[in-house]
Amino acid sequence: IQPILKPGSLKDPSVASLFSTKDPELRFSDLREIGHGSFGAVYFALDKETNENVAIKKMGFSGKQAAERWSDIIKEVGFLKKIRHGNIVEYKACYLKEQTCWLVMEYCIGSAADIVEVHKGPIFEQEIAAICQQALTGLSFIHEIKRIHRDVKAGNILLTDHGVVKLADLGSVSCSSPAQSFVGTPYWMAPEVILAMDEGHYDQRSDIWSFGITCIELAERKPPFFNMNTMSALYHIAQNEPPKLQIKSSTNEAAPWSEKFISFVDQCLRKDPEQRLSTKACLNHPFITDALPPSIILELIRRTKRVVRELDNFQYRKMRKLMYLDE
Ligand code: ADP
Ligand code: MG
Image (cartoon, rainbow, N blue to C red):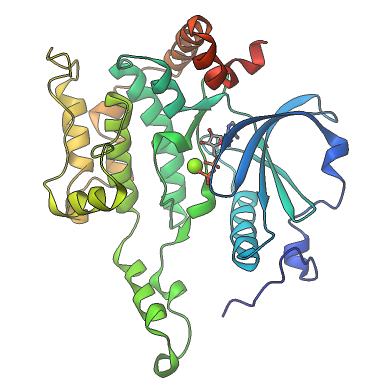
C-alpha cells in the first residue's frame, strides 16, 4: 500500500536520496523555454559547473493536486535515475526549489515531431527507419525490464545534436505486472481499484501499437483522426479497422513508401495484441534491420536546420530551439 506522501517532504530517506539540496539557481543559467506539457515547462540551460548545455524539466507541485503530482514526480525521477541506456534520455540530477522539482537531463535539440513539423513535405523513408531503429532499441530496453512506456509518440522521441535518438518522457511508465495495481483486501476494495485491474489487460504490445501510429505520424506529419476531437478519435480507434500508411499522398502522387515499411506498420497496427509484432520482432523486421547507419540522422538534422534558417520570423521563433547550439 502506497503511503500518502507529504508534497516536498524529504523525511523518507529513499525520497531524500533522489534530490540534491543545493540551490539550482546558482548552478544553472541562461534558461530558455523549449517545450511544455501538463506539468510545467522544459528549459534549455547552461550548467556552469560542467560548462555543458542541459535540459531542465520544472515540475511544480503546489495547489490542489499537490500530493498526486508529488507522487508522480517521485515515480518519474526514481525510475529515470535507475536506468541508463544509450537510447533513453540521460538523467543527470534533481533539485527542489519552492514547490518545484528541477529535473536535469541531457539536452536534445528537439523531437521527431519538431523535425516533421519543420518540413512541409514528408521526410525520407530511410530517415524514418533510422529514427525508428534507435527509438525501438530504447523501447526494447524498457520492455526487457518489464515496463510499459504508455506514451510513445514522435513528441517523446528526441534527437541529440550528434544524431542519437532518445526515448523521453518516462512520466507515464508503468509496471506491467497486474499484481502491482491490485493492492488491498478484496471485500473492502473500492470499485475503481478493482477496475484498475484492467491494467493487467494490456501489456508491452500497447506500446507497439503507439509505435505504429508514430510511424504514420513521421510519414504523414499527423496521426490518424487528428482532425477529430479526442472522444471521436477514441471511438474510431476502437471501432474502425486499423489505420494504414497512405499509399497515395495528398497531392495524389504515389507515396514513396516501400513494401517493407508498409508491412512493418501493418504488423504493428493489429487490433489483436497477440497478432502484433513484439519489440524483438520489430527489431528483426527488414524495415528496421535494413536501416542505414545513424549518420543519416545527422544529415536530416543539417537539412532541418537549413529549412529553419529560411523560415519567416513567426515560424522561426517557434522552431528556434533547434538552433540553440549553433547560435
Ligand atoms: P510531458 O510529460 O508534458 O509530455 P516531456 O518530458 O515529454 O513532458 O517534455 C515536453 C517537451 O519538452 C518535449 O516534447 C520536448 O519538446 C521537450 N523536451 C523534454 N525533454 C527534453 C530534453 N531532454 N531535451 C530537449 N527537449 C526536451
Ligand atoms: Mg511528452
